[in-house]
Amino acid sequence: MKNLFLLALPLLASAAAVPAELETRADCKLTAHYRQDWIENALKRFQVKFSVEGGGIPPESFCDAMRAGHCWSAVSNVQCGFDPNLDGGSWRVDVSFVNTNAGYDAYKNCFQESANEWRRVHNTCDVDSRW
Image 1 (cartoon, rainbow, N blue to C red):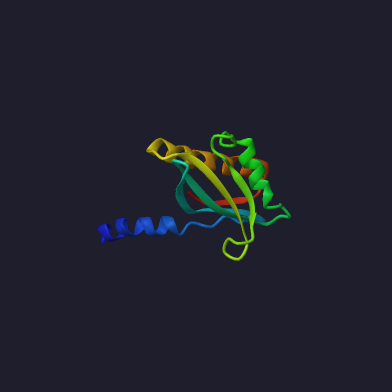
Image 2: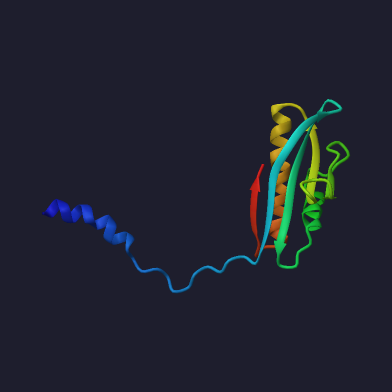
């Protein structure tokens, strides 16, 4: 009987009271997901599709975050904007990096830094990113 009580302790502990104040949800969200990659001029080009929902924040604000990061240069040939031919019309970023493991890591770091910069500016928003 004593052992049964000891086994029930974790269940009792998990039934603790829920705080009265719940965290409020963000009213805006950046969603940015890898879409495709290809080889162009001996470089690997990555395409990320993104959207910004809610909060009255324009989608091009993610392009601004890309410019503020370390990946906006002539070498990486960043193209950021609305593409009417992409999935019926979507925002996208295309970026080139060397076709190596280091280039792949640079691509992931570039986009993560840009997402972090976007969230810093829009600190009440959520970010859903998959590179």
